[in-house]
Image (cartoon, rainbow, N blue to C red; front, side, top):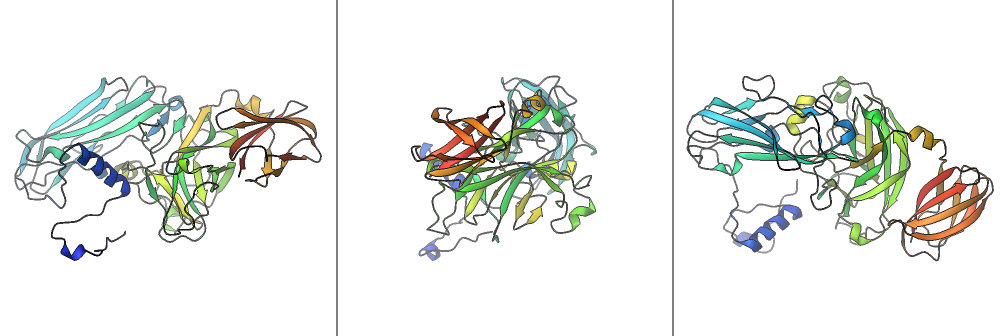
Length: 462
């Protein structure tokens, strides 16, 4: 927690002050450009006679922000429980309170609409409308799930006028996606996981990783292709302000520690629960220019990895730069974590793992890019490992591939445009290649051997 200082003129200030993030501040400024803005600061308990309230930290959200359509084929494969806590911060007891929950489809149609009423709440008290409580709402499920973004909304109502209705409603979005799995909600501008809030550990000297956990009864339908993430540089190291050339380590682990849920004794030990992580895929991503800072980017693995049913995996993005902050979302999974008791977005700092990351109200914005696993086994037979070093480089590099003899190399930029072609001769699996004619940026090397086998890897020209 950072405490705002008074500055040169702080002692002259006579009105309440709060400190906001850059993101929230920008939102307020944009609103102020459109007209007057009223900001509520403080605690409204006892301020109004008739008043209800909801909190994003006391409501069941959808299980994920992005759900691949291959994991949501029907009502049994994808569904979630619905519920929220209704508060009475007013100085009048309330009777006949109601809570309504709705879900709208990507087409804007109401596909779920349920409510409970007759709830009585004493002064300063609250009532949970949730599974296992006196008042409940049906689980949400659909027979089919068209691709697109859905919105879950909770609304609390009195049978009289609510004197402060601004906090009577909360909403969450979830997206049925063709190719992404993520805890973060959608960025409606990019269509990718929203990672506009950036964090790093307060005490960190070596490594910092953000992760997304995935575990599903039908996971074998998927193959992981790569990871989405966002990052930005801090200001505490002035000489380290540029993100171009920054290296990020992308890893997919099979998470084989034996536990049922977060109540397991394995998590009572600091860093416990993360002792059996088996690497399934690894790649490096290199930022190529400053326009990528703060934006969601994508790094691909050399080959897709088919997942197993009912097996936990961790998809992680790691940096060794203590001046780098990584993107997170603000979807609040507090109630979900207490209810489902499953890890969502663990993180790592200097080798110590934290099952709930920076907090279950700030999930990482790691997105897992997936594809259908159908036919992957056949294509993998024709794929061999390959790499290049040094990487990044400005001129000469060595291509290393599991193969011998003549091979064709095609170099494309990230837009898919061919930048260079060449024929190389692999001796002991290695050959020299010169990239001095290429412009600065990231390139994809595709190597085809005489026997038809292929290899693909990324190279950064600096």
